[in-house]
Image 1 (cartoon, rainbow, N blue to C red):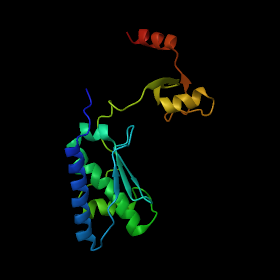
Image 2 (image 1 turned 60 degrees about the horizontal axis):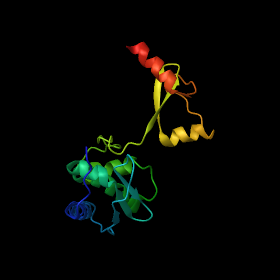
Image 3 (image 1 turned 90 degrees about the horizontal axis):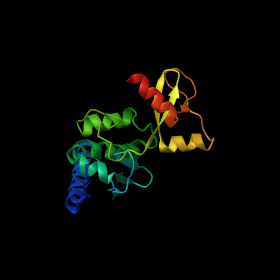
Image 4 (image 1 turned 45 degrees about the vertical axis):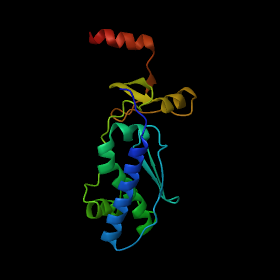
Length: 178
């Protein structure tokens, strides 16, 4: 799928939604809040990120463009809830009771901690590793740590150390499946 750039109209809609959500929060909580700085610079698989001490929201422009309605409805209130939670309660668990309370009572949403967006367009290269119970994929970052000898990863199911799968091993495994 070809990724289209985030338009200025979409950016303005995001900013308008942020303002509307802050007004909802101020009404529900009977307190005013400073508006955050907003950037569209987030990369990778994360949809959004709240920088608490900086009072800043960052959004992934690729995922935002591909999933605009979901962003408006779910991602923006999710990230705003983090900033509000920090303003009201200080440093607490990221998706703890306080954050859940804001999501449920202020924004009337189920407090989900992860998104279900299609990340295929932003997902980096993946590498196959073998354990006792099958093949596990690692991100390029984790793969590079293994290659540099900085880290070893274990399978979550069987507990064995993961071993990189070579092209030859992959061809043998594929031949066994056929």
